[in-house]
Structure formats: C-alpha cells, structure tokens
Length: 294
Image 1 (cartoon, one colour):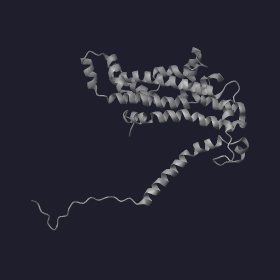
Image 2 (cartoon, one colour):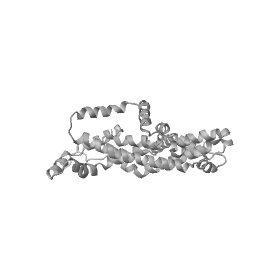
Image 3 (cartoon, one colour):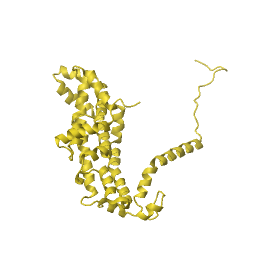
Image 4 (cartoon, helix red, strand yellow):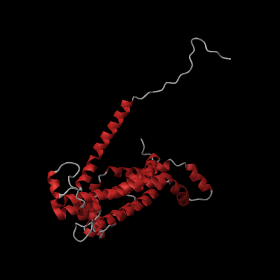
C-alpha cells in the first residue's frame, strides 16, 4: 500500500476566483456597446412619435408630447393607396424570391457538388467570379433586355432571374454543404437502384434543410430591404414595395411628412424582425453546417 512521504503533497485543484468588480465592468461595457448599436433604432422609434413642430426643435431621443397619429397618417397618407398595399407587395415579392432561390440554387448546387460533366470546375469558377461583379454594373443591360421582353413595370424582372440561379452566393453555400454529405450515401442509394434524380430527392434534399433555411432567411431579408432594383423596374404606385413606398411618401408630402415617414419606417422593420426571431436557431445551425463559419 502506497504511503505519502514528507515531500509528497496531495493533489489540489486551483479555482479561479472572479472579482465582483470585473463582472460589473464587463456588463457595463456590454450595455454601453449595445446602447451605441441600438441608438439609431431608438432614435427612429422616438422620432415616429414627434409632431412636426417638435421635429424642428427637439433633437432628443424621446418626444416631449407623444403623437401616435403619425402612424394613422402614414398608413393612409398617400393618395389612392394605403401603406398596407406596400406591405402586401413586399411580402408577395419576398416569398416568390425565397421559393425561386431555394429551388434553383439547390438544383444547381447539386449538379456542381455531386454530378460530373465536362468543364465543371471552369463553370463553377465562372459562377464564383460573378460574385466580384457589382450588381449596379448589370442594371443597364438587364433593363434593356427586360424592356425588350415587356417585363418592365411588373414583378417578372425581380423574380424570373432568381429561377435561373443567379444568386451565386447561395449556390456556393449549398455546394459547400453538400460536399460535407458523405458520398457513401449516394453509393448505397445507387446500389439499391436509385439514379441521380432519386438520389437528389431522397438523399440530398432531406439533408439540405439547414442550407435551405439559411438561403430562405437571407433571401427574404435582402429582398425586403432592396430599394434600387425595385425602384428601377416598378413604376405603378399600386405595385410599390415598402422601401419604394417610403420614398414615394416623401415625394408626395415633402417635409411635412417626416413624422409619418418614420412611423412607417418603424413598421417596416417588424416583418424582418419577426422573421429573424422565428428562424434564428435554424439560421445559426445552417451557418454552422454550410462551411461559412470561421
């Protein structure tokens, strides 16, 4: 039986004691950074409740006298159309873009990641190279093309290109995800008699849920916040989205409509905020499994 000698010491565990002041300082820094980040949002919410007179004199965050009528005036302030129409148009457009991106990018990514065809690496490199092109460079040739088709003034220029997998970022994201799926699953399915189409439908599609959710979330947010592209192709006020509706509101009412404009700006953040909260867990899981993490 082993015995302890005079030079032996029993094992000890060192426990790091945290000073309470360090914890308080850490939380103070976090709260300070949070307030700096949220200041523009807080200022916008406060401004949406200010009257026109107070907007010219009061530069503080919160109004002296709350004016909730800005929301009513902003909702019905444009002649011939309510702001609810803009919300409906944005939701319809965002949902169509989401479905188009999910379908086209998934099929294209499957071809790059799993199928073998001539010049596959070259086509994939060209596709990645399109990420380097600013979208504004393509506006003029695209506008000329869609004018020739007679699509300008409709939602077609905003939706149809998405059906052709023009979003290279989402294709790259899904390719990275599919490369992490073991090829043994494909081989086992082919042994059972599955062809490329059935492998895609029964193996790749069910496993690609995280990548699809990530694509859906980013597509929705980017489409909802888009302004320039929608401004170029939409000309009828009845077809305007929320982002264009805010600009049209200022054009129609001028400086007298700053309060209602901020009120509608606050409301325009609600769908994106709710959408993000509903899918934030799936978004984190998708990023962690699609090769985008550091």
